[in-house]
Image (tube, rainbow, N blue to C red; front, side, top):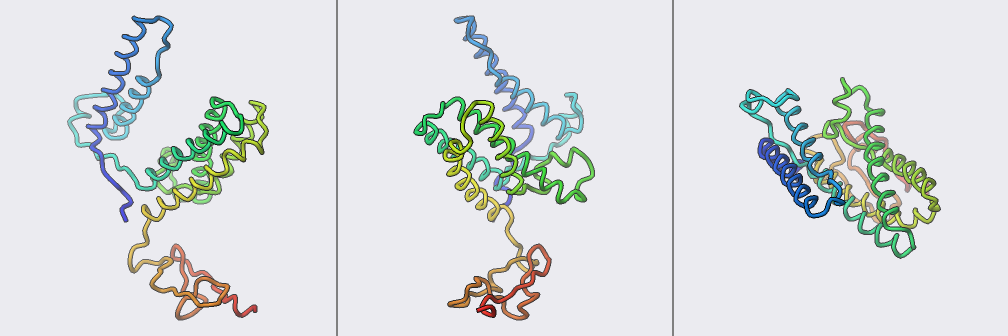
Amino acid sequence: MRPILVNIPAKLLFVVALALALGSFVRDVIRRRRDKTVPWSSTPLYGLIGAELLIGFKSGSWVPSAAGFAQPWTPVPIYAYGVMLGTSLVVGWFIAMTLAKKDGIDQQEAGTIYMWTAVWSIVGSRLLYVITNISEFDSITQVVMVNRGGLVAYGGMIGGFLASVYCCRKRGIPLLRWADVAAPSVVLGTAITRVGCAVGHPIPAGQPGLEPSRTRLRPGSRRALVVPGSPDTDLRIAGRPVPVRDADADS
């Protein structure tokens, strides 16, 4: 179990972002010399924004300076949950686009709806976490730092649903028709991100939690978990005792 898969040197990432921005700009210039109708791409802008964010967060100053580059920069961690979340979005994209084509929904419209649904799913999941754990945050900056705390799936579903409703109404696409397209992506995406939760947030040995070593299955019982010892207090989730009632007692 590895919450952080790899740490990327921040200065190396800064150089890559600048190289990407410069390379994309040069490519656009060459293409426009051949054809003036070719539009400018947004890749150089994204590269510069990424480089500026690295400077601001790693050097402590948003203005590039020799002193800022001279000081050591902490590496950029790549979290297991983030990788699985990104994987779920990519897989969901291909599934949604395939089903949209079969259902006769325009690919461009379907892609736009999917993009905004995904964006507001992440925003909604973060907002619900912040609202339910407001005491953990001291500033707005901490709120936008997704690696501080986490996300709540229910908030993501609410945010994604509202975004889908708005986008479908704006484009004249029946909501239920889009729901048929998006439902498989939502289910599979949730499953993939749950794998990220298991990989990225394992329960340390000896710490309060739902420990498999302390549970067993009772054949024929409608209740899945039976905790040895005191049935009312031995089951703890996030350090809090959870009352356990045997379903066989209700039979």
